Image 1 (cartoon, rainbow, N blue to C red):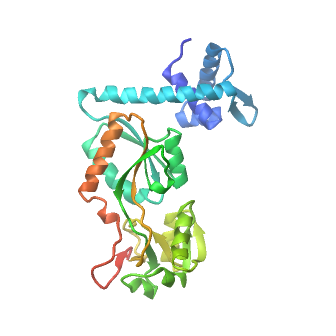
Image 2 (image 1 turned 45 degrees about the vertical axis):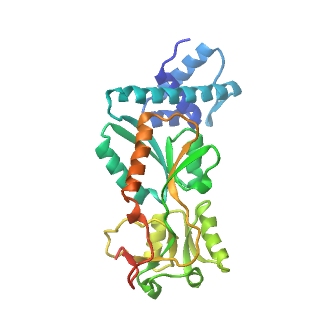
Image 3 (image 1 turned 120 degrees about the vertical axis):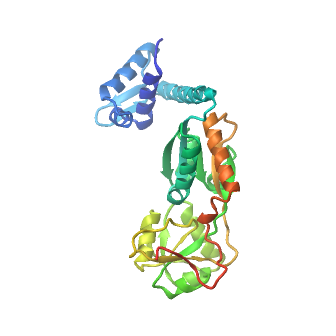
Length: 318
């Protein structure tokens, strides 16, 4: 039986997406090329990989599901071989597939990627974003080499390298007198309307902070977007809670202040998660090692909102 890596990639994409049309769109090729790859592989195997249902796409047969698992493993090994082969000359090169918790990505990734691009110009990056549950899934499904996330979503099949430990803070409209305080407490915040960042596990973490202090949050608005939460705070619709310093804003009309939360609060490490006992391509390990070097240089300290030394809160966006 003869097949090519290109054919296997076409078949894998079709099986993963459950659609020949979606696979063609992802790979930027014609649907007929995907169909031809499936037909050729099925002819060589002498069994069907997929059941084709009009208007519903394709679904793997039981034998096809087993074959797709083998194809994915083979393609991953081929990718690692290609990366190792390219690095023989001494330069770290190849693709690093990075998953990142969506609310952390805008502040965390630019510095890391800029530094890596300067040091390893032959490295390319593929980014995936999602909530904490999705990030863990990207690792387990083999879609990401590493993930920037929190350890609470990980299991025994993951390794974790801590980078920094950002405490939660309140983002409060600059028009609210509370924003002038050097710190606030959870009971004080419970008296104010809250814009809840309503993401899996994140929501439970916030609720736990209030329950620990014997109170409940006054939820006025919910959103799954940290950007929308910040916009609502700036508009005076309530406060929100974050733990990574937002990037400076250019719009002078967007005004809020970050105020540390006083008290005994659970503070999670943010770091790099990988799948345990998996031999990583050289470029992936090089990227991880560089992130650890940035940690030792204090590159992530600017993302932390800590208790101020003076009487005024830290200002962002005004």
